[in-house]
Image 1 (cartoon, helix red, strand yellow):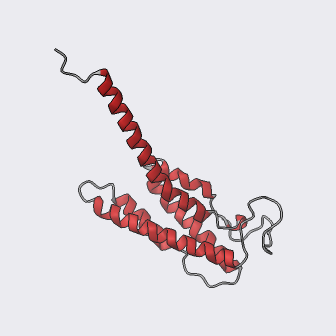
Image 2 (spheres, helix red, strand yellow):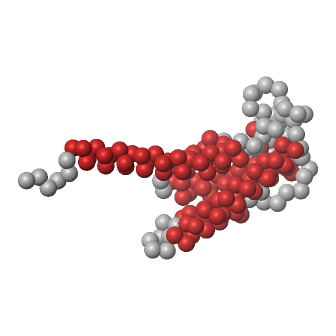
Length: 167
């Protein structure tokens, strides 16, 4: 008399768990990809962080700290770019990124975490919209990032390493 699960049932459970984990990973990667694309719009000499570092938010617990650092650096990179072009700029989503991070940290609180979690989701969307708005402004000024390491694009003048905006 065997009351435990059979071999076929165990295999089915493992496959279902693997599929659920892959779907969860895909759902987590989508906003990080958009964050990466938004951060890639900052020209190289004004970047305070590299766009690929957005994917560090996949690391549990570390992401609760990294979200503050990354969003602040990307927003300040856009601010520096627009100011260097002589354009008026707001905070380029810096405050929105901070509130997104606060809500993300509060979402781990048991029982009430769903409320700041949903607020964090909404703030993430607003932050990404603001980021892409700044990216469009930079592109409209002709300050397109130099991805190839060769000639600058659309009259964009590269600067030497003595960038006053880089910390």
